[in-house]
Amino acid sequence: MNAVITDAQRRQFVEEGYFILEGVIPDHHLQILRDSCDHLIDLMHQEMDRVGSDHIHISHRGKRYHIAKQYDQPPRLTEYVFSPLMADVCRATIGETAFLFYDQYVVKAAEQGIKFSWHQDSGYLDFDHKPYVTVWAAVDDMTLENGTAFVLPFSKSGIRSRVEHLRDPDTGDKVGYFGSEPGIPGIVPAGSLIVFSSLTFHRSGANTTDRMRRAYVTQYSPEPICVPGSDQLLHLGVPFLQEGREMRNG
Image 1: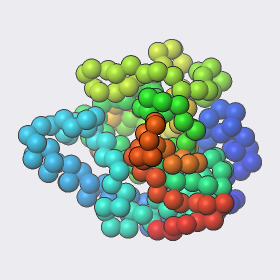
Image 2: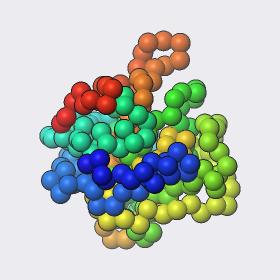
Image 3: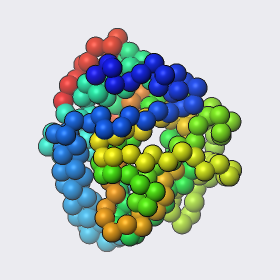
């Protein structure tokens, strides 16, 4: 797996905040990602029914789903989350020590999936922290028409630090970039990864096709991220790598 990520891509991550790996997820892991997504959407619908709402946080029934911190619920999903491929990505970006900080499915329903605004992942935290890495996995083939992710290189945004974001009252999104740069679209086949820093601006378009568009996001931090002024973990803090050695594998 060490040969998957080139020295040029490592440099690009430092200089521009991202790189793309096409078709690197093994077929059996891709099937696990698809099965896990179906499982978690079913559970989300049950929760929406229970609370009597079609909108929970930034998930909208039949339009867009953001299902977070459920990596240990579907059968075998941890095989991907703590895979050698993820270990290699972490070593190439944040270093020899890594913790699983967050995970989520990002799903846009057929012909209804709504767009997601320009933001930094660090923009969803209201305090400064060491940047972490986001690994955006294409569970389906990604196109402009089905609302793939766009990244904005550091050289285009001119921003390499966390900035304050504004909340969109209609969607619940946080928005941190209001410029005219279009960004670089991830037009990639299923099984590909878009890897970017938590300081990199990214967005996604609407799904205008007749098929669901699924992506799975894992985020790994170089140290546990805690609520400021306390020892309470923010989100997750699952040990993954210590001095380059895998503490977990599946």
